[in-house]
Length: 115
Length: 112
Image (cartoon, rainbow over the protein chains, first blue to last red):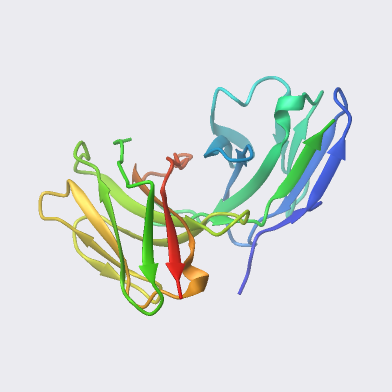
């Protein structure tokens, strides 16, 4: 069964450094998402992406964050200058096109630790 | 999107049915009820969704009241692997982003 994959599974970085989290969505899906979950807290929406542009974003997704689909398979989240409070699990998700298909498939997550 | 209310935690005996309630009294006519779950530290997993009719799939059944103000997710024969946080989310379907807003969910503990 096809699944969303994410790399790396765990990323440790120093405060102020740039990180890129990578995701490979399911191949025939056209909508892509990033969510994050700070330890012990709720899953929070960051951004959705369709047709090579952002379709929705939350207040969390400020100028430090960007997303890109550099080729036909990868979907990346970049954090330009990481802060301690960016430490969280980051989940990528994807779904098919079509109003009736709102089943989002989530990846296993990348645990980001900012020191 | 309409707000949902779920009990913070529930226990269920292994092999018995787990019935997880959700209140969504402000749901509007074009909003669907979705259920996802999150097993410890994993990504959320879609379970089922419905508009007004009851729905069943290989994982669960979804019972929506006639007035649509509440629903119940039923896991017919809970196993230890069903221990997870279960999220009820109300969302209209469209071709835009369709972001999911996760609340606190219900932490289901299936006990042997």
